[in-house]
Amino acid sequence: MVPVMAPSHIEAHAALRTLITESCRRDLSKVFVAWLLPKTKLCAEFASIAAQAAQRQGADQDFQTIAILGFAADAGLLSEQQAGTLKRGLSRLAGRSPTINSAPMAFSADAVGMLGVALGTRWIKDPVVTGQVVGWAARFLRTSYERGGTDDWQRCLLAVFDRQLGGTLNLLVPESAATADVRAALAAKGLIESPDREKAIEDQVQTLALATQELPKDFAYDRAALRLAALEWAMLTARPPGGPIFVQEAVRGSMDRPSQTDPIWTIKVTQKTPIPVTRLTGEIAWINPSTTNEPDDAVLTPENELRIAEVTLTGRSELRSEIERAFSGLAWPKASAIGEPFRRYATNVFDVNAAAYLKAISAQGRDSNEALSAMASNLLSDVFGREWERSPGERVTRTDWQQGIKGWKGKEIVVIAGNDPDPSCRYHQLISDAIKYRYRFHAVLPAPVTGEPPGLNLSNLEWWQYIGLNERHNLAMVIKPYLEDRIKHWQFVYTHGAPSDASTGAESALPTPVGPLELLAPKHSSEGNADSRPKRTRGRPTEIPDELKRKALAVKGGKTRAQILYGIRYPTPQQVKNVSSILKHYLGKHKPNEG
Picture (tube, rainbow, N blue to C red):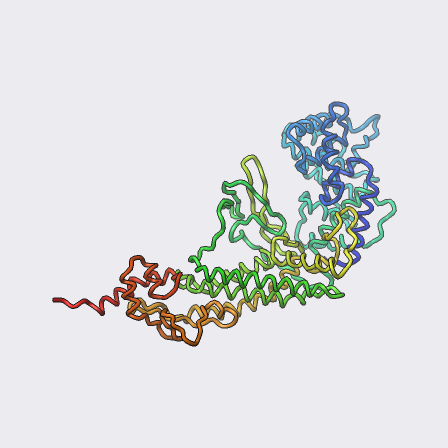
């Protein structure tokens, strides 16, 4: 069972947003929505309401004020001074009686407010305050939970209060189908954990089903916010109608290298000191933002670097033109229609890099298949994002970034991937540009969803049918076999290139690459070529004339001598290394006459 998104869910999403935007009244509910849904326009009021609440002292610190500060604390909006206000307010609240003349106080039935109090208490991390709040809640929380007028969605929040502060009352989160969206929303905020993955997916499926039902007339505002949060989470993990299902249990370990970029979080730092990242194994790795990630291969010649840049940038421009052409028709193109341009771009870029690094890999004695496979994987990561091998529903490793007094630090975590976009990859950038191109010249820009800024947003179904992890994964897996074919081709080229025979003063020729990469080789006129560089015949050693060897002996420096012997401006490290053996062999055959 996998959640499936349909156009009706987009309509339900818009309706819920409209309901929340137009019917919000009390400040506590506005703060609850802003905490639950960070992308709503109520977020602008969140900090303002919290700041006003933090100014209240003494008797003015009522229950709702403390709950507001609790949500603000969990969202990271409180200063050190405001945190002190929250701490004093929690102690004051814990001294209040939950009843007056045996009648329960209103706050005892306010599940949203109780959640805010729990979050604030957890954030303060003061054992004395926590003990006071737990003792205070124990006087009425079970009664409120079991009261006949309490709805199941409110019981979910009261159970979360109990769990966040130790679970002394052992209140259970209701498991009814009607509260699947509430469980999903709370799980998305990390407040509850599903007993197993199948149960979490079932809640998402039921959330999508609930979203298409007509809302009751008495549907509470806070309840609508929970459903909207759950719907947005379910839509992220859902596949489009008719799309293939990819759900596996494979768990990937730590990333090959810790990264500052993943589909969800991209941090931009100005600090120059290394950043620690705690791996899944507990090992501490370091990212040094002050250094660039240069390839560990031998330095390429300027000609090869220029050729790589030319093929890559020209290919990117051609790819952009083809994608824009695909999106310029009357109908939105199928995702499969944009696969061929990406395949052509990927194979061309791979070929030019494989040809450029051919000698470097051979000279270093590296395993060519391993190097070529890594080259292909890195290329697909650049085009389709680091998680291109994974699908929605699989576990993936991401980095949770935190900034503290000592600067940035990261911790690897394992999460269930949704149908997440990855704005950092080439595919996302090109598709977004093509869609903007379509709206500029070929279609009317759709009306923005209520509560969101005008322009392109992640709410229209047309946009989502291209940018998700599911679509990127499918395209990458279609292109991968073509790159594997190119790996086999270049594996043959790398393997069958006879090694240099330095003892005889000759360097063996490598087979000439086929296809567009033949442009890497210098072109010479077939007529009147007076070039004095060594002539190379396919499959035969390159013979270096004795005249060039004598010229090389007349100068100093291995690089200078290699330039003369091979007739090139930028000799490879292997060619420089061969100079000594070539000249030694020459001197051995042409000893000066004695006496």
